[in-house]
Length: 468
Image 1 (tube, helix red, strand yellow):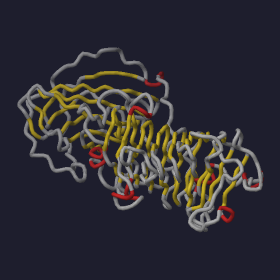
Image 2 (cartoon, one colour):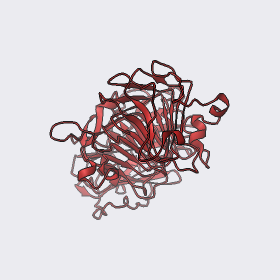
Image 3 (cartoon, one colour):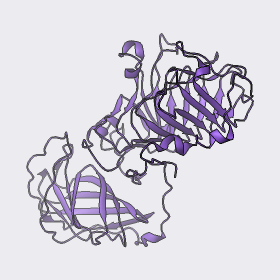
Image 4 (cartoon, one colour):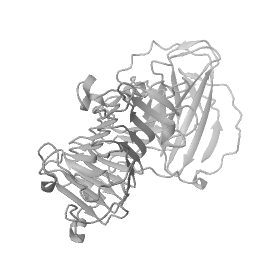
């Protein structure tokens, strides 16, 4: 990654201010600044970059500000910004304060930034203005500027396609959310609330390691939102609450996180429901993640709960990659379509229970695919692969490792008058101590399996393929 620092001096022509983020109060009228210093630092890779900008006010105190600069190359573009509202016209860019940072005292600073893209070259801007006044301060460049093309490309996270992919995001600098106050917001929900409704580009919300005890909702009006934990593992960022069905309006309303905006993405974090009753964990419906979003991607995520951990609703298609899901009863359930690829699924109840409870509609070919994953549990010969919440439930365990926790003689069971024998339950080429074959374990043929790949599950009518 390239790190380069450049200070601007000179005058940029007047640039139009842009409207504040939807739902954010308008800032007070801007006052003139006598001068400023700007530090512009980028981390580059071929075709993309992150820019961190620090604005220091060298003049009179201001309440309401607008920073202007121009990209030196025509192929440079602002994609997604934070801590300011960004507008671009040609090569000219304007960043305007949002409601939590309108005031900059004399000598004080404010930090903003954006994810960008470039083609051809990505030189740094050479001049900045603050409220139309030239930035005259200087900042010493800390290191020489290497060529962007020498940088390695960051590793990719599974992302929704063909819709806009999540932009690469900084792992250093100021996070979007930090419980300790070092980020732009203290709560995940506050960061989501600041995203404009109807956004058409990826908004990446970075979350500093910590525990966030809150209820989080990504509304249907806010698609393309990514929640990204900044820790070294998903254990470092935990979003948790303890609502349960009996006290919070039923199972569906008990979730810690409600993800409704299409093309949402969660990566490198934990969603947990830690409800307990009288000091003892019980099998009360208490959802961790309630997913309504179509084309959602979960990567390197932990979903923790007891009964009904992960709800995948009818409208959802989701690709879950390299993640961990635990619970007790029906803890992967719903009428949506899900591919769990390279995941670890753990039945933690000592007496075992069904893992899945699918409610696939009769006209829907695909329900749940557990693909090349690992199924383990607290005890041997107790855990069931699933039961039919709806009569036409569809579940396939494919090429997965089933441990001795599986109840080998009868791994499927009935539910609410729905017979497992009438449901579309199958296994295909599973291995492990729990992967025996008998008359209670329908096996998919090779010819059938050709039509039940992860890509077929997720394609839908729009050809969605987050796998690559």
